[in-house]
Image (cartoon, rainbow, N blue to C red; front, side, top):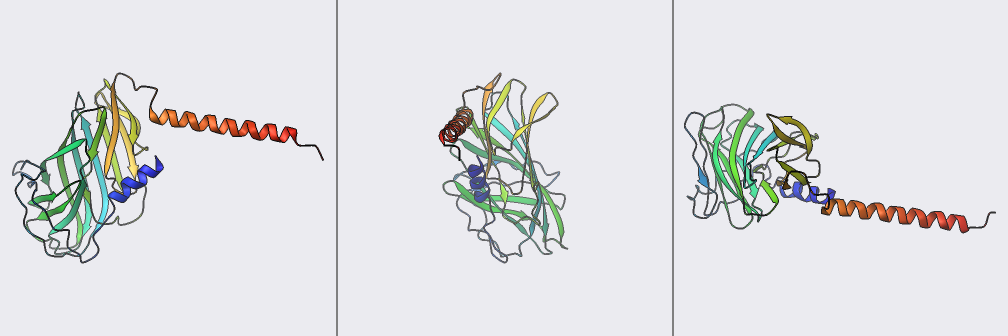
Length: 268
């Protein structure tokens, strides 16, 4: 699980340097709106409207905090995601670089993007699994400082007990290393049990409004949150439990072999 967690964090690691423009956008996109203008819903896919071309290079900002809240539907067929970002952006900023990895079991549609600074538009496009783009501001920032914004989107599952929730990641580096740059909460109906979570730190927490809550804190934004679901209680025979059991058996076997070896050694 530790290796898998590292892989997810690497997938979401920053890939744009200072002064670099975000990657060129492809054929698909989705857009959001500013507060009070209503949702601008559109699907992520090749059929969506093409975004504007390569944006002008801007000075790189810093990621301060990301808070994700994922609400699982009753049948786990879809997940509603609310993702609140706070970044530190320099004066004159007109865009924030974004990326998302689309995993095989999930498709994503964006409902809206909002920010208290004014009108914002989300543009994401690509081919295959990795999509890139920007959060575009209608007006450049007048002064450097904190820039909060929120993304809301729904993830549709393509069947099976495994639920995958792709995370739209800001491609700016964290302002400072800390254990809770990313905070995530998954809310599940009381009749569903979550097991085999990824990252492994996604653990049960206090219930909220009659729903089960699972919480995780990470030093960077992950590429996804994933877990299996079952009605009622989680099954005992899972891959994680099998591996843990095998590790215990091996440890006991080595301990027994070492003890027998020491007993057979002649006393000096």
